Length: 258
Image (cartoon, rainbow, N blue to C red; front, side, top):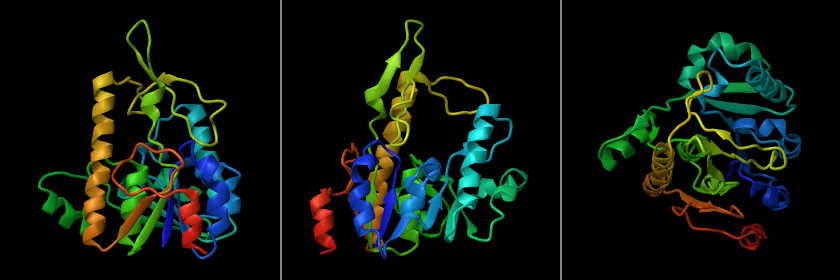
């Protein structure tokens, strides 16, 4: 069994359950989780990055500082961590390798090419590590990689996917989005949403919903892929809009470990 944690606000409500049943369970964390105090408490043994933010060059100084803090936190870990990162990160060795040189960090590369076409082809290609189901994001990538690692039961947490609740459109028709995570809920501000960190080009509303639609569809494709692999996926997030996986309450999770 494995736990996969997103960084949605609801994760804060579930930490006490995760910590209580953590022993003996492989734990996957994503993105900036290492910057939280829970990182050294829960000690995830798998860590997944998926966004180009973590390896592209030309970031603004404040973003470069944030990225450097993350890798410093990872390298300060006192336990072994398998760092699952896209192949593009390998190409950006000058950016990333000096920051993960610690012996406790083992980088493993995966293919994040979006898979399209017939569902049978997507499943076959995913099974051969030729890419990820379309609509990819870091949580989808983490679940997919957990399936590839042969886990037969996966429980996901912090999978709110409720960003649409925080959409704002200014009087100048600029789309702003407040992207809250469990560790920055009090300091998060709405700002233009862009798919690029170097040249900020805000998306239009229909473009953003199209991105999200592919992500939600991706979970359904991933659910079908998991069934083919004999894997069960459950969503134990306190709050979540993902409808592709059966839900579990905290009490139901605790009952599994009694």
